[in-house]
Amino acid sequence: MSFQAAWAVADAAVNEGRIPGAVLGVVNGQGRHVAWAGSAALVPDPAPVTRDTIFDLASLTKPVFTTERILSHAHAGRLDLDAPLTSVIPDFRQYNAECWERATTFRDCLGHRTHFPAVAPIYTHGHDPATLRAFVLQREWPRVENPVYSDINFILLGIALERVEGCLVHDMDPGPGFTFTPPPEACAATEACTWRGRVMRGEVHDENCYALQGTGHAGLFGTADALLNFGEALLGRGPDLTCEALSDQRTHGWEIRFPNWSGGQKCGPKTIGHTGFTGTGLWVDHAAGQVWTLLTNRVHPSRHAETRIATLRQEVGDALYGT
Image (cartoon, rainbow, N blue to C red; front, side):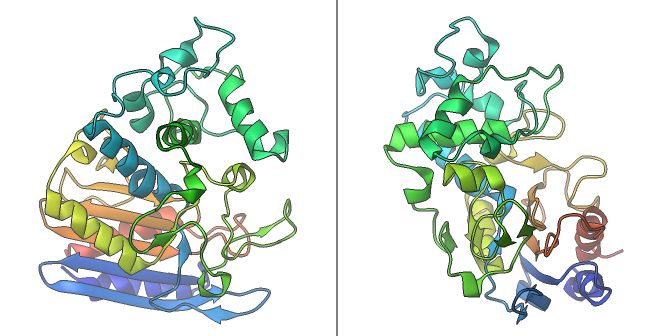
């Protein structure tokens, strides 16, 4: 393991101005290593990154929060992964009993095996979260021919969690070290949002999650150490459904190593990982007993910049395993 080599790659991206700030954390047989550099915010008020900077984890919400909670309910018998979502959300597309959406199962959503589109601007259809949830459930969704990675899958899983637990996602306990409502001054800033008219700091970057006031696909905030603790817990319980392949690229809620994936090519073939749009990522190599997270605020102050984040993640992952 070469933590210093991996950190040199991330540090260079900060020094070159490609990303404002970064935190790299690794846990393995040699212990825990964390390094950080750069800015948590550039505008409107500059602030440095620290080890304790809280990041908007974006789509890491999918595996770290939603997948864990869905699998926990399945283990307890409160839902069946191979049952349709309608077993918990009977009113889903209730005006067309024969539609394809009503046949979608929990496992389909976890593995992105559905025919929902990748994303949709749900937030442009109103301001009331309850009405937007109704829109998600009753919309006649365009059916994509080949399954794609889709936020809609996990928005629906979030609604299912709300039905099972009897409260909104935003009111659920996200687990040790994580939060849905962080103190803004402790957070890395994300985008200067044209829709909301301000820099997002301590408020979720994802527009749909913001409009729905909590969803299953985004909204989780946390630190590098919180993610390392979570990854260590995954190592401790050993391979399970989060490692069981549902396709050549995906498990239940996670990706598994495939050519050109985010974690590089030097990790074990059963390594699982996931990224977040804001510039975050977490990877767990059960065979090597290694967890690593790379947190950046690459969308600050705009997503419309060339940060080469995909290459950065791969180079960091490969550097961790040496030559």
